[in-house]
Length: 310
Image (cartoon, rainbow, N blue to C red; front, side, top):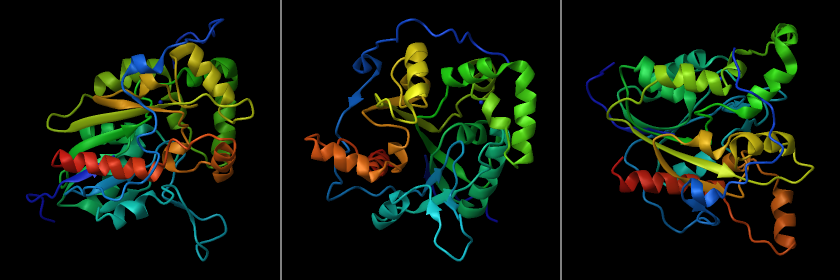
């Protein structure tokens, strides 16, 4: 395969910190953490610029490309619900990848690199991803693709206080037993311990420097979930330890490279268009205005990259 000619492509966790939860949450004004993005992506615009390089969409922890629950004969569930299709309709070459859901960052990065080499060999790309892509770009350096930029969205670059809390509660005695049980269910466990703040800031980040010539951009998100939300407990712990967060990742942990801003009132599931549509219906019926559309957000990222010549 010719490795001298490239066409750019975009692409978009032991030791633990203390998990003693402060008596009061960190009431940090989200506007003090960077640009607050309230409703910029509420609606899809009529026109968006098209980037000249392919965009690689790579899922995060526990993600997938397409999931078939009842066999391959029936349509599967797509991780990027409606997002990849909308981008393609806008003339963007989109490459989706799939890596092991909960293997170590290194293992996931190796699989990501292999898929990108296969699907985008000889091209320059831009990536929409997180820790796996950072490892791939910095430490694997696939030879037949040129990564022009990496855009990360609510990726835990500095780990998670919730991960610290969970491991502290489980304790070192019970942890091996739980991991053995998960492995009998064919669930890999390598990624979980790598989500701690100590691992990310004292191991991963020092060993994974930004690569010269690659543009690094990032977004975070913040939400205040209701009591019945699946994210209520994790959000509470993260808020007390790290401040504003989207239920899984804090704004502070999301920052890497050029921080483009915080998506306000947006949860981690909203970011990939997995929000329960009934929630938005009830939201609008009670007189509230919908403030975020994931498809509009990703189309705007493509538009932004096009403006920068990527």
